[in-house]
Amino acid sequence: MKRIRLGSATGWSRDRFEPASALVRDGDIDYLCFDSMSEVTMSAAQVARMENGETVPYDPYLDDRMRPIIKVCKEKGIRIITNQGWLDPQAAAQRILAIAREEGVPNLKVAAVSGGLLLDRLEELDLTFIENGKRVLASPDKVVSAETYLGAEGIVQALREGADIVITTRVADACVYLGPLAHEFGWDFKDHHLMAKGMIIGHLLECGCQVSGGYFADPGYKNVPNLHDVGNPIVEVTDDYVVITKLPNTGGVVSEATCKEQLLYEVQDPSRYLCPDVVADLTRVTFKQIGKDQVEVFIDQAGLPRTPTLKALIGLEEGFMTEEMVLFAGPGALERAELTREILTERFKRVSLVAEEIRMDYVGLNAVHRESSGESSSVPYEVVLRIALKTRTRKEADKLRREVDPLAVNGASGTGKWATSSPGSRVRPVVGLSSALVPRELVPFSVSINSL
Image 1 (cartoon, rainbow, N blue to C red):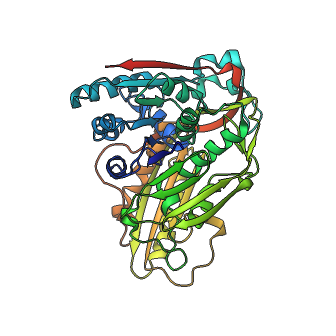
Image 2: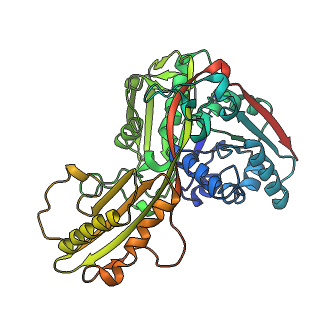
Image 3: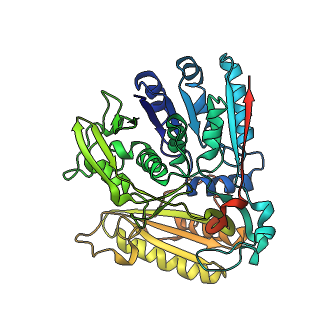
């Protein structure tokens, strides 16, 4: 019976670095999978490139992820699947080959899976936003990016062509797991039950340690041991069973509860979880604890035919934002924070600030839930006033710091500054993300093999 073990190295771009090496060393894995995508990180990547055209078009942590493990993975026959290619998988593949040369790795094949970038095709496609029904090109000068979520077929093709490492553009997170499973077991992409099986397995592992105790702990209610050393998850798959576990002798926990929470993470309708390769019915999934940190996953005919369209993310230039924080401590801290809010409100009028949005929150009291925050049961000893602006121009955003810095000498008693007082602007561009649907036949993928 064929047995495939996949290790989850990361759940997003800035996840921890050391688990990848631990999985390669101790995990007895066949594949090491990196999910480094999120809508937030892609937006941040666009902002970085707007600020500095020399910024690499792929995950800036590519070197740090690949260098420690590339040689031992080749020696052990562990294949790597990663979506760190972002905007230019081919450039990322060439960088991996350069790392391999420096590390003395021979005979390496790196596949770049590209496609789905629509910026140059928007006029031809004439897309509309899902959120408001407006044409994407109604304001063409504001559009800075357009990227489609691809499926796993390109990954499968790359593996069939012998790639040791597959690096992709934006694919659905779970595809970095579905791809190797479909390849190893010979799954037909037209079999939506098998596609759903792979996507559900991938969905459980795509956020890394969330299925093994990360983002789960709530002291006194849901305790997780040694969360500082949480073990990254591993899934073992055969034709007959699916078992999720984690690295031995590590912190964290794999339980029915952690699996259930992750199953429903970022899901709207559990009965129709929309993916590029299938629509998955998550209500057809059950779990059973079969040992310490071992949970068997049962997926019962959970597939529905895939949709005729793919989701595209459209990045829109939305001006600039900046924020400042002012601290108060001791008796009357809240009152002094409230006075500072009044001062700034009047000063903004004085300098004719033009802002699309102004937020002033008291961190610790109402900064997260805002109007829904309950009444405080005690007088706070410390208060942080957070002020944030969103404006159309950098010039308007710069006005915030010009009004906050002088509070050091003309504000309330005991005014403290949270942020640095060094010179230079903290204003940054804003790239907002909206969605559109694209007929899948209009979004082809391509696979290129790069070899040493």
